[in-house]
Image (tube, one colour):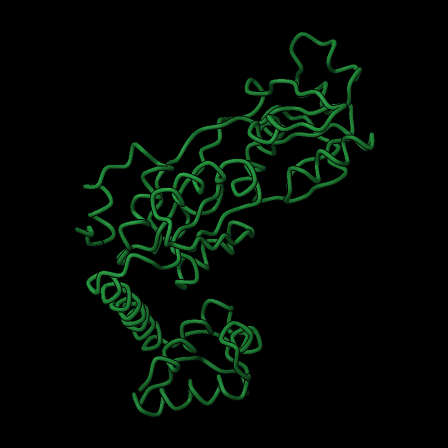
Length: 309
């Protein structure tokens, strides 16, 4: 039994039983993944996966129990490595943070600047992606911390804390008719082509809920993951934008913002870590910088760390 076999099983489940994707994630070949799984099954004397021919289709009942054990073993192996680095007194390392573009572009710069001043020997690796990928990266250990507005609270293996609240705003070109309206309504917005975030990004669910609850059908003609991209297409006159308030603080010349907190529900950006992880002290400090209301006691209930002397 070896860790590569365990990782092959874990990633097979995470990649929806696609051995091609597993091979890509683990930087190996598909036959190599198949061999690792089969050798582990033979050693344990059970079938971990259900099969249809050569294709894996799901977990067997024994496989479900084995998966829980594998998850714990791999988590503790990673914790062991971090603990070793901590107790060896290393004052350097890498903090890997996975976040959406909006968080990375508009929220994290000040936090990163402060972190670098406090921990000059620690490298920061910023990774940008969709919330579901952020969650996967934290779960797999590819990222220490995940930051997003949507999706992170849906995973039992993750524990997330609220960072801050924010609202959406409407973005239009200068002299747009909406600027003359005292309080814009959803009906007003629905009369224009709209440009906003992809589903699952940056509070998009609250936008959809607001229109649905009012029985208003919006004309969303273009979506993007990136606030800057949305603003660019608004500048080209392709529609009215709905973006995060943080992004509206840096509007390009020629664009104006309109408050929309009365239209869409408040959004909460969350910071997540893997339950049971061993964190370096600098990771704990980074979490508390972004989520200052989170106490050390709360963190100690779900993760562990050692304070450097």
